[in-house]
Length: 361
Picture 1 (cartoon, rainbow, N blue to C red):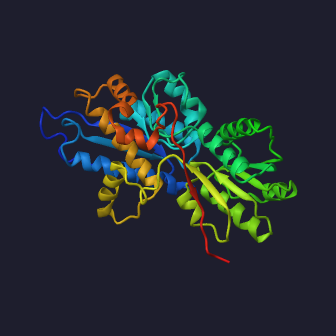
Picture 2 (cartoon, rainbow, N blue to C red; picture 1 turned 30 degrees about the vertical axis):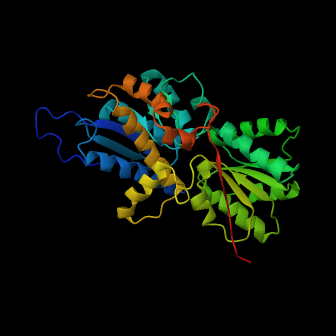
């Protein structure tokens, strides 16, 4: 476990306010580590900027980051450390549906704020967990967009599912099936593969035999890329969709052949966006000499949302005030609202798209 923050002024004066401690359990190792690393990097761009300017009313932000390798048992260990040893204010920006599901009993018992998780899981998008605040859209929103695209725009009827065999896969699969039902369609086949593995050969054989013309894929970038590349080499070239969690940036750079892939996204491409937050992000990332992408941008926006809410609360930060101000964020910051919410209301989250483009033969 380690932390990334600017805390040099702490402990030098009796009236120094304690830091705002945030716990982030994410993948910094294993086959999904690029997602976790980029989320943490994006958040720290903004937090370090705020800390360098005296923090939030004198309270610096201390982001404690723990590696869970995208394995739920590790997330539970990390979360217990956050709660019982680190005395965090909130769990922030944690990554994954199976990992979030594993710590739900701890979240329910301790009522600690669970802020901006990197998942669109249904159980985090209902009123049963008032301590949760989501910026990103739900997987229900993403699934509906994918099926509308495949059925209405691409005219597919033979649609199969390729599903990571865990809570993440189950949640998205359920939403995809519901979205298909609106068109009177059932999946022609459902194949599964193990989390944190690239063992997709059995699933590929199964889906080739199904004669599917389109496949909705649920997983991270490495197994999805392995499936698409191997399928192409075997003459199997259906249309593909995937949810934002896959990380389109990491997926696309691993695709070696011409392929038709659409990924639903929850934030715009910061390289093509003129929203005030996009402009500010592109300025703030320049000193780090890293190319902007959606995952880094989402981590940055998560941090900006937290700071915006915390600045409206009297120090020292109170969690009840923090959650209240977060829930009012879209009403008070129109630029944030334009990024995440449709004009019809805050409950209708905006879905973007990205497409794989290749000139390879």
